[in-house]
Length: 235
Length: 294
Image (cartoon, rainbow over all chains, first blue to last red):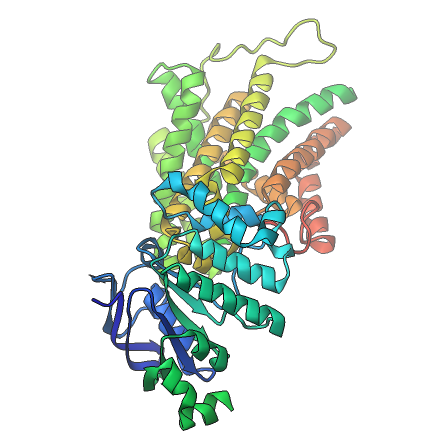
């Protein structure tokens, strides 16, 4: 059974059809990448899965439960966690408060402290700055915080929307190392990236999205060699 | 005029104003809308406290928490009836503001129907009213009680908002509802909780105000409503610490203008202040341009 099964997803913004029948799957422990140009519908797909947008048509099945039309907070509580574009950390709260908010929907309060410790050992800089306002962190640190906060929810599937956006090249590498580390932990990842080259190096399988439809799919390795993909996204 | 006496008066009145204005600030901070029915909940709090003392024969000590709980529930109903349907439709904030004005009129009219328009009073001896002896200034036990209750409630609120899980959820929703929902926070629950807290604070303020002035009418919310607005504009809209500071500033201004012989103009002083703040420092005296909300 797939961990996430998206079937024939249609989403509209008023009269504009943003998604026109998107279908794909994520298997447990896999990294799946959605590749596509600006406005292809990558973020729309993630937001529809997260429950921020209501699909016009289609079904979203997560962990063998139909979650189509669920409220966003319920989707997150079920273990499907999104790190939205632009980090969206809560600037007015401290680093520690942001991380603890990540664990908000969890019922196993006892193991939260242990998870916090493991996040801090993974991101020593967040530990050093735990009492600082999150808004005072650098862009890279904010991305670490956003990912750390999502991990505090103990996701079964982590959806990352443009995690490397706006970061210096050195930090981009760091973010991708981080994602590789999360994958090694066995957490499935749905990755939306404009940096298709990096995304395809990391992913197991990828889908190419164009104008709200999936136009190509395949093993990430084979897509990296594909002439069309190279000219459109890797050139 | 006796300055010390005026300071004492300003402090206890400031406690009531702060308590009342905190409800405005809370709702504004989390939902970004002004709840103009807040003063009607305040008035209901006073009546519930009165009914508890006169009809149920409970002490003032029991009447305050009772009035807080019932006012909190009234406030939740207010959210469900006057705000939530508009939120679901993504109605502009101004619609929600107007809806709250309608709710305020309704709440005042219901109170008129049930309680009549004649001023009502707490029975004599509900609370000791003789001034304490041996002090250089005139302080009555009720004034001390008002201040203690107000300060305690403010401290409890501060603790709730900063330290508890529910408070953190409130702050997250205040910062960005969409992000909060991605964190697994049910914003509907947070809104209802915010309205409950705001209503409970208004209810407590209503009982305390009713005890202090001992004139309870369906219209008692009117003048407090505008003073409460002045308080939160002064403190920076939606700024909790600002609301506390603002409450004491407005009370001081009012008390000193009375003492200076301007009793008839005391509201004019307060609203001149409001006018000046809006002109010169619209972000409030305490807040910065980008303030911390909740």
